[in-house]
Length: 639
Image (cartoon, rainbow, N blue to C red; front, side, top):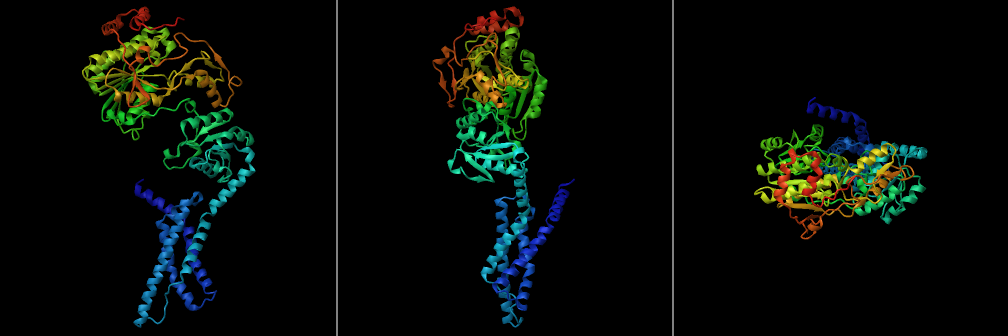
């Protein structure tokens, strides 16, 4: 169907729907002028006055109808009208009245000229007293809105009646925040006949709002009263609606809400919604990320523009961190993003998920292969000649790598060396390695291999004449494949228990987007050979994460869902470190005060290269000896 036909159908639909309203407006405007004029003359209606009023009907009808059409009054869904629509109707009526007065004035002047010239014998047109126009305008606005808002008023009264009649059957909802978002949500509940629940109370830290009514819902207290109000109003669900609050205050309020045992949800930021109208359907459950003990680090996007218009290669691009890395890179409009991964399903899913309109429309290429195979990497570099390489491909699961150390060495160490060698050969501008805090004083195979990867980056930085090599070291990434949160959620689905290795075990945490932003920014800050470290705040107790996750699911820890301590796994530390003691001296901040650069440590480059070249022919049983030789501080935890 053509666009013209669609527009025609829409136009017909609108005119049919509003025929009755147009006819009613015809009656309202003309009868109002008639009534106000007669009232002004003390209900004395002679034939001359009747003729004068009758002659006004055509242009009174024309002007008011014209301005109602100009202001799209007949296109308005009055059932959902708000102040804006009401003001538009009043303004349209004002202009209609002004034009009626102007026409009366012009016709009166013309009529008087005709009388002076003997072409007319009576004054058929005259300007009415100004009070008649003003009173008529006000009455037209009042009657017109009364008719238009009748269905809305009936709808609201019916909803309120049903709400009170079935109050006990509805889900009782507490809204946190009496601002624009909270008000919009109350209206959305009302508009949907309270089928999603009944907003019985609102709380807000602004004490001046306490006692006010918002669309019939009372503001009953402040955020410090959450527990008391939940008990008093038998609350079934809490919705957080204060997007402008600080991260610290937000976590305080959410923590208090979660402690009540009631389901807690978060409304989206109204400024990020296309039509600026909030809906209950867009409300999401509170996630463990919302309860992190520190605010998410915001990084400077200007530094990341070095990828704009360039070809970017991401190894391991289909993984949880690699895929987010591709999304973050795409925000800065590179020409191409090449996703290199051994697992085709993840890479294919990522290509389909990238919103090209939103992410600057880069061309997405997928190539399947392993970083272990130098020749395959060479083919990729030869085909695309990338300007930037982000090396995310790695085996990272600590317990699994304890059982398969040779695979970790081949994939992590040899894979990094092969990728760096190609980057140097093909004159790549920037090479960024994704490392981990487990590389610091490693106690497991995965951490030791990652420490070797950092040494590889520093080695190539020494010998490269063009490429800037750097590494980024960060802690655990919440929600990534193999991390603790997906494991906890899976255990919750089965009814528990949640398993934690030790009651005192702690980890540094960051979100997947935060990790990806840090990696992209590091590429822009790099001058060669740096290991970038993020200031990640205080480490988080794993058992605290487990307890919060249980509460978020509406259960009581150790009562409804148990937490069991299973003992430290092979190679696992009680706590992680972000820097080596030897790296502290000379460590300094970058232009972003949340990102630090460590001081490089000395090592034998020849020994490193010699060991790497021996990997393909090395006996698998020599894997741990290999790692101890390259990483002297590898303090392996025995099984």
